[in-house]
Amino acid sequence: CGHKDYPETWMEQFEELRLDTNSRIRKGIGYDGYFDYSLAVQDDNRLEYMQERYHIGDGLHPNDAGGQAIAEQINLKKIME
Image (cartoon, rainbow, N blue to C red; front, top):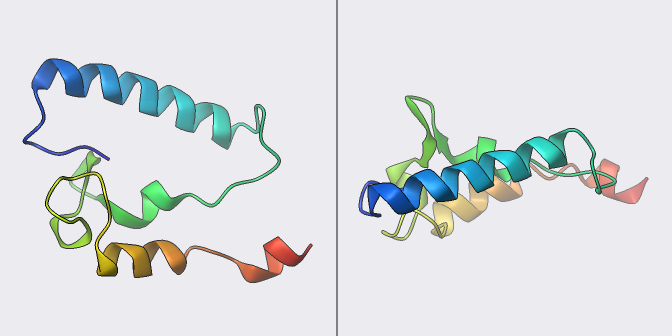
């Protein structure tokens, strides 16, 4: 997820890389499985952004509420398979 305070040119490059990486992971290229943490904290109105309530102020690192939202995405049964 991104944040409005980062330079626009950097954000474009970052988003291109992030979206490509996420696409590969979601297609199973090079990974056995995953939990989609991005979906847990993204802003539904601006998908490339983390919800304000979920980051420490930098738009990149989750705060306690973001960590909780991410943790709730973990399916322990999947891990135990």
